[in-house]
Length: 79
Image (cartoon, rainbow, N blue to C red):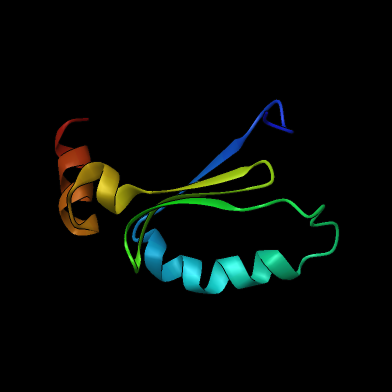
């Protein structure tokens, strides 16, 4: 069962890169409550989604299938 009623979704473009810094930092925070972190991986260094406590991190690089530059241009064109 989920210990949290609500989750905060946080999106990163290329989560695999940022998670290298983020995950060790979060694991050191006091009040971790011994929660297990859960990840969905595409490969050994490709993180698609990672959950920790009530936070859920998702990778927009894999959700969009585009580079950040191409995705931004497409969003601006479809305004």
